[in-house]
Amino acid sequence: MSIKCMVVDDEPLAIKVLENHIMKVPDLELVATFDNSISAGHFLENSSVDLLFLDIQMPVVTGIEFIKNTAIQPKVILTTAYREYALEGYELDIIDYLLKPISFIRFYKSINKYKALQTVSQQNAGLPSETSETVDYIFVNSNKRMIRIAFADMLFIDSIKDYVRIHTENDTIITKDKISSFVQKLPSIFLRVHRSYIINSQKITSLTSKDVVLIGGMEIPIGASYKENIEFLKNR
Image (cartoon, rainbow, N blue to C red; front, top):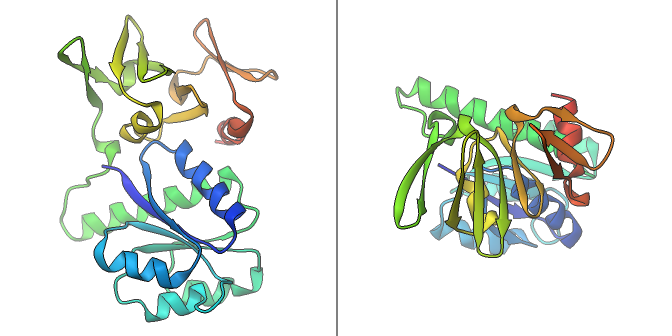
């Protein structure tokens, strides 16, 4: 099950950075972005959101004021360029506090923190976990048949226009889908490293100094906007 995310920030560039980070994590889904807290509050009255990335310094209603005065709230990760607001944020029971500029490595640590807290919450409530990490396969429609593919068998996925090709240990399965949609169906062991490629990070043979990652004998290109993912892998 995907984690529905929303971004609220009055800086377009800051929104774009978080959009790119969210896009790289398979089980995150961006449902909305807003440049002000008032519009975000109206959206939350009628829509379900799991995780909110919320800027602190915004005109009219600040992020802190928004948290204090909004009855319906998802879990919150605060984002700001000002370190001095951290203490007040944590007193409001936020998940994490991200200091701008936000790197993908730091962003990903926040996502893992959210997932860990959700797992503990579900266990305390006696509920089974519903994250995609508990499912070890996916069904895809290929040649009018539903084919079950284990995540552990996948090497990498690439895209050709409106189709994706799933490369496994022994086969290549083609299904009609957009890679941007397909990435949301995968667990976090999969990372998008190029606009046309998703890799299974557990299948990496080696990381090179070039803009490629090796999986078996295949060289997978690393897109310029996805290089942080490789730095993240090196620091795992």
